[in-house]
Length: 78
View (cartoon, rainbow, N blue to C red):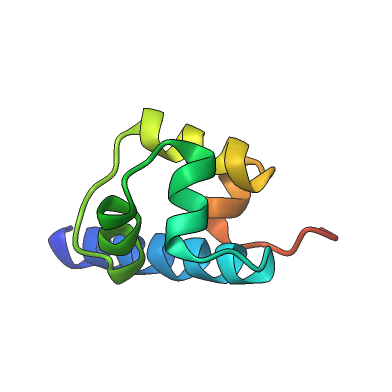
């Protein structure tokens, strides 16, 4: 179970990074828009922290994506 949770954290981090870069935002830019500290964004992208649902919600609002996209990494086109 622990290994699969670690994989989920890495997947979430990779998805966040891809969405952020796709929006042409730096970590500092996203931090300013989402009101999530840039160090937290860095930790999420590296898969070394477990963000709260509230933090994930703020990031999704800032990136204008659904939570499922952030977690599953499916394309915007479906």
